[in-house]
Length: 171
Image (cartoon, rainbow, N blue to C red; front, side, top):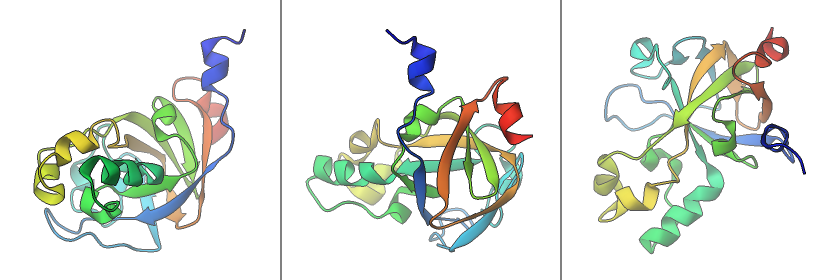
């Protein structure tokens, strides 16, 4: 029987970047460019609080497949990604499996740092029960390890564990 580390390193395929969202200022409507530059140690260029994001929540990602689940839990159509206020919408790869792992999108390399838990604003934008509908489906937070341009349609490729082995992949 394979060890857990071998199972965690096995991804059936790469993912795909489906949507990009930037917040030019707090609570402003998201802009949806076709490409953006991810800046190491900061986040996405043009995102309102990029300069303050020196920690582990520089970029937020959400799973495209979870939009339908969130809609089903609310009893309505799937929400659009801009309502959920995440930066990147990804399909085809389990984002939660990228926690504590490095992954590449376009030219940039990111490290999955934690889960993007919903905030109370989800009640405001999704209606009653929005917070609970998002629980477990809020996505992933990440920090930018290597700067680079990312664009719609780019592959999302798992590179390895964030500590140790990933350096050989991104050096």
